[in-house]
View (tube, rainbow, N blue to C red):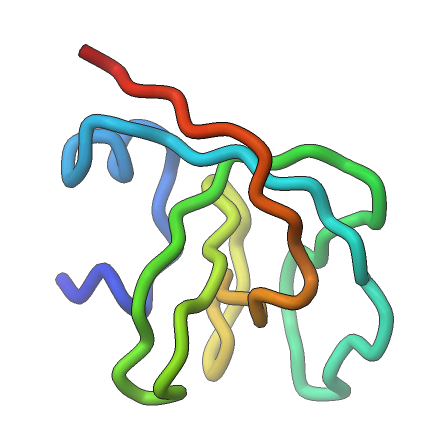
Length: 90
């Protein structure tokens, strides 16, 4: 399974890397018309995984536990989030 395009749960994400990032949504505006699934709420804190997107050519923020359909899955542009903490699970 590609981890660039996937709806990962918290448990699945932590099997691939021993840390979890937390980010606050700072921009929930301009939801694409073809986005089907969960959408972040401005001001809320989320567990995330930042993944370099080969398709988009930039890092995308994946909100863990969110469910969304193609083409976006649970990936959001980095300007929508402020990374706050990294928690190492060792």
